[in-house]
Image (cartoon, rainbow, N blue to C red; front, side):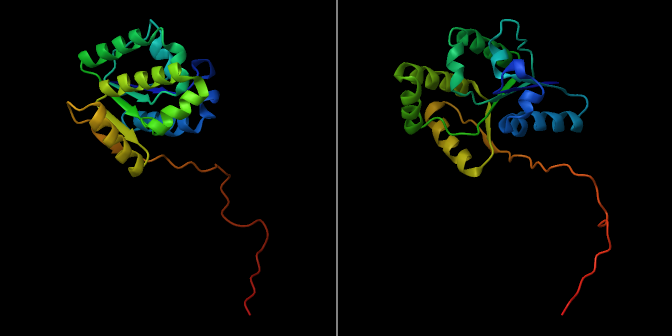
Length: 193
């Protein structure tokens, strides 16, 4: 079984560059690593989201976990129809598309903020691209119950012909690795009154 995580990261910064991004670690790199460790028979890959737009992207995957694209996806608008075609090919071959959402971007307030940032035309294009991805997804994951509720409401309007399951998958907890110490280096003297 082939599982592909497509994270919001520049493919040219693969490795350490990706690990600097908390969202890439929590919603892509760590879950992919855990998945591969739990089932060594899985073929698990992590790719940068822009790789989906490359003509040589191989859409043969059983599961594509797509991080909700960020605004810079509009720079790929010329290649967008080909990307959707590859996702359609993946689904036609029995593959499933899960979109992992960390921010709610399907609200009028978000659209207005994007329009102020990049202009009305790009804001409309970004919203259209997001909607096309969500119309094709088989499920959505979020890190919180609140976001899951917002996504359920939005998907009921956007994908009215079917129910898109929305599940909460919390972020992993990272702790700083430190050398193991079993006892203080010097004798400790405690005094009680």
